[in-house]
Length: 193
Length: 193
Image 1 (cartoon, rainbow over the protein chains, first blue to last red):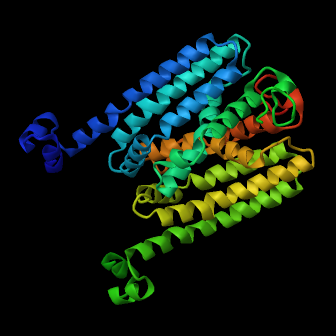
Image 2 (tube, rainbow over the protein chains, first blue to last red):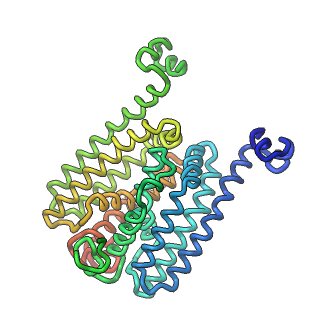
């Protein structure tokens, strides 16, 4: 608390006036960052509610999402929240729910709406949303978490990971049949160069 | 170091004889657990090298894998390793490489071999392996990490997550065409009840 008072240029008393204890200060810092998710969630909803080309828009969303999550600041906060989840489960849970779980919910609704419009063929939209983010995030986020390299994005290409996840998703859940199964067809327009 | 000497019923000197410092003791504890991955890696290789039914065997592997990773002991170690990755990046990196990265490599080789046998249609087997584990692990592992609930598996069903991941993988990378695209067809044998 003293360090924070010094950094903020106020008295320790002033810090305690705003935050009753260390835990409530920590909660405030952590949860203030979930607002960043708002913009992303809005982007998903906008982009997918009007799309006529889910394959293209999912690639775009995948890359945008992955870049956002792989910011050094976000990765450091993620490590901090995980580290303290056994001591402060309420804070870590709230961070997850207000951030990722909201984004998952919007993705899921969007996938259902696209299925209703016959642009996707999803039977369990919540599960499909989990698959989309899982294919996108598991490897790069883990690599950053376990190498301690919070600036992972500076030295690794994220675009191919995003593209590949979006394409595998379309292969699993698209309506196009064989021409969308890019694992098999070497000549279609979706194939990576 | 003193606590450990007491728990082990030896002198502090004896602990220091085996481990020069806290870091080497920590490294030894963490890295001794990657041996657990051996059995899983062997299982993948055995099961997929002889399979004639990748859909069925991938469901089995998915469930086995997910159960192994969601053990309370593994989740606690995972949190500890992530927490210390910025201070001890070598230990955390080695844990990741000797554990998950080895499993990923074996999965990738297996998917390539199955593609050669025309039982899968994978063009980038390393990426396909990442997609498989991503769909399987991202949500349950994160939920455990962020809720601090290391005994998550005791109160949540893992089998449906495993089954769904394996089926989405087959939809994306199988050779069966429409009948494997369980998101669309309500009547095939792979459909969940």
